[in-house]
Amino acid sequence: MSRNKEKILIIAGLSLMLAILFAIPVSAIGSEDDGGNYIGPDGCKFCHLVNYDEWMMTNHSRAFQVLVDNRQDKNESCIPCHVTGYNNKTKTYKYKDITCEACHGSGDISANIAEQVIGIVYSDSNKSQEEIQRLLTKLNLTKKSMVINLTAEMCGRCHQGDHHPTYEEWNKSLHAQSMVTVKSQKTASDSCLKCQSVEWITAGEHSKPTLKEVTLGLTCEACHNVHNHTNAYLLRKPKNVLCESCHTMSGAKPPAAVHHASSEMRRSIGGIDTDTYIYQPNAACADCHRYTQEYNASLNQTGITGHEFKLNFNVCMKCHEGFPNADEAEKFVRNQQQKVMDHYNETMIKVNDAANYTKTINGPERATYDRVLNESIFNMQFIPGDYSKGEHNPKYAEELIHKAEIKADNILRGKPEAPADIPGFDFMAGLMTLLLAVLAVALKNRK
Ligand code: HEC
Ligand code: HEC
Ligand code: HEC
Ligand code: HEC
Ligand code: HEC
Ligand code: HEC
Ligand code: HEC
Ligand code: HEC
Image 1 (cartoon, rainbow, N blue to C red):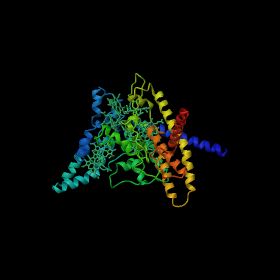
Image 2: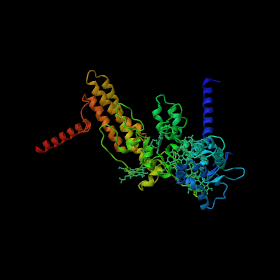
Image 3: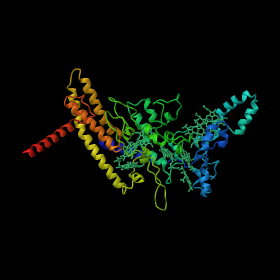
Image 4: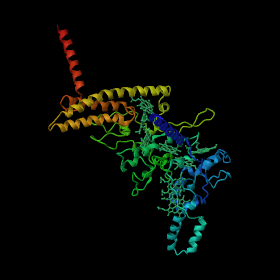
């Protein structure tokens, strides 16, 4: 077999393996009985009052009631995801609702910790060893260690399926790949983790993991916190700041490079010598990037939870009556993107010329040339660095390119320090031509 054929076969095999890997659904659906001793949320409450109170405020603690309300609490196809510790063989379950043990495993796991705690708490009040032991027996605790599971597969046991395919959509998103991406980059460092790993995000201030230690990317708990109901849908941060907390260039200044500047592009900030142009001021990232659709069997409509966060052009119609359908909205956007990218590509040639010209400059003025060139490049980097081809704010994108162009022009005419915020060279030249024309007409009329 030829080398090439071999290569193709290996690649095909790998692709097939990957396809199979990605096609595998989460193993068991719902909260599966793990065979341990379940003690129920009241058992955990004994020592974790704060977590218990928080949990009571979330819909997880009422998940069985919605089945009752819909008279579906005897429907075997519904129960596994609305209870804790479901046994597929006996069709029984341990507790109603999504209790602590649905996510942390059966309670006897907590035994060794519980033993220590009870030992400490009750030794002061002169409790005898027997009394402590009785307490432990009452709690039905044996010896294992409690589980904190941060994988998306844990949540995905229930958050999957035709009605709300949250896990499946997340799995297709780049958020699911963030660990692969960061580990494959040579320049990656621990400081990347705050936007790349759920383990870093959920760890306490003094126990942050390092790049070597982390294994998980941006799973559900990176954006959600099931133990905090402050924000709607248990979001970790309010919806209007959540996405921007990561999709930001974090105050970068030239000569640094511009990375993930979607927040700055939307807000019209961060460019050098740029004016402000606000575009669609009230739309948060998730308003445009999380398009949802209810499941409806009679309309043959699948559920969409928007957890791929890819732009779905149907979203435009949620706020605008002006677009007749998604195709028209997309056409409008593509057109706008084309204009910005054409201007970008043309200007890039000029910026490259300016870079080459700068290389020829020697002596003390070189520093000024370098600074202005870096500013020009910085503004240009916003366009690819925002990922939307200028669509997040076309006018600001044009403004960035415009100021980059003026700076490149200034370099090319040997006046790098000329101001960029008064009309540029091209504009002045145009104005002069116009004045000359007016003068010529006036002179002609005098005759
Ligand atoms: C695969 C697990 C799973 C199964 C099976 C399941 N559910 Fe749910 N159910 C969920 C999850 C997860 C949510 C929360 C979804 C969300 O908010 O995105 C939910 C939410 C609900 C809600 C409240 C929110 C809403 O959409 O109005 C109702 C009512 C409900 N389910 C009823 C049912 C009924 C009836 C059945 C059986 C026909 C059923 N579920 C089967 C996982 C499941
Ligand atoms: C829907 C899943 C889920 C349920 C239900 C749940 N937890 Fe958790 N819990 C988690 C996850 C995930 C973490 C770790 C991530 C984090 O802290 O954001 C966690 C963290 C914890 C922690 C350690 C961190 C801390 O906040 O102190 C304790 C203790 C805890 N849970 C106890 C409980 C108790 C007690 C209950 C029931 C009253 C409960 N959990 C219900 C998923 C759950
Ligand atoms: C008798 C007291 C007691 C009981 C009952 C108890 N826990 Fe704990 N649990 C503790 C203590 C103490 C810790 C350690 C706290 C720490 O390290 O800050 C702990 C830690 C945890 C942690 C964090 C583990 C980690 O790796 O950091 C989780 C999650 C947890 N418990 C869940 C539960 C759940 C769920 C239940 C009920 C099924 C439960 N616990 C019952 C005392 C108890
Ligand atoms: C055993 C099944 C099960 C597991 C595991 C589970 N959920 Fe849920 N979740 C549900 C059901 C069912 C509901 C809907 C409850 C209702 O509306 O009454 C729900 C609701 C929610 C909601 C909306 C809650 C609210 O109060 O508005 C969020 C957010 C959520 N889940 C996130 C998570 C995350 C994140 C995890 C993993 C850490 C997780 N869930 C694990 C079944 C589950
Ligand atoms: C904790 C940090 C974090 C949060 C919060 C976050 N993202 Fe991301 N997002 C990332 C990272 C990192 C990537 C790139 C992952 C990769 O390339 O592997 C990404 C990728 C994306 C992509 C795909 C980009 C592409 O090039 O195709 C979109 C779209 C996106 N995020 C939108 C959102 C939206 C909308 C929100 C808010 C609902 C959000 N993100 C919240 C970190 C975050
Ligand atoms: C990049 C951030 C991000 C990640 C990762 C993420 N979510 Fe969400 N989730 C959101 C946002 C934003 C909302 C919408 C909040 C709002 O509209 O107020 C949401 C809403 C939800 C809801 C309520 C949906 C509804 O329409 O009823 C559930 C349930 C949920 N998420 C579960 C999950 C689960 C399960 C995972 C992991 C498989 C996950 N999320 C991963 C950001 C995220
Ligand atoms: C007014 C609607 C709107 C808002 C608000 C918005 N976006 Fe976008 N976004 C778009 C459009 C349109 C595109 C271009 C999609 C395409 O080219 O197919 C896009 C593209 C992107 C991309 C490139 C990857 C992709 O899915 O095509 C990322 C990443 C992104 N946006 C992140 C964000 C972040 C982060 C925010 C908040 C700071 C945000 N967006 C706010 C409409 C919006
Ligand atoms: C969350 C609501 C929301 C969504 C979703 C949304 N927009 Fe907008 N859009 C706005 C608001 C608010 C304005 C400002 C309206 C005004 O100034 O009268 C606006 C303005 C506009 C304008 C005129 C902007 C200007 O200043 O010239 C265009 C064009 C536009 N949107 C296109 C789109 C497209 C295309 C999409 C889909 C990718 C979209 N919008 C999605 C809320 C939204």
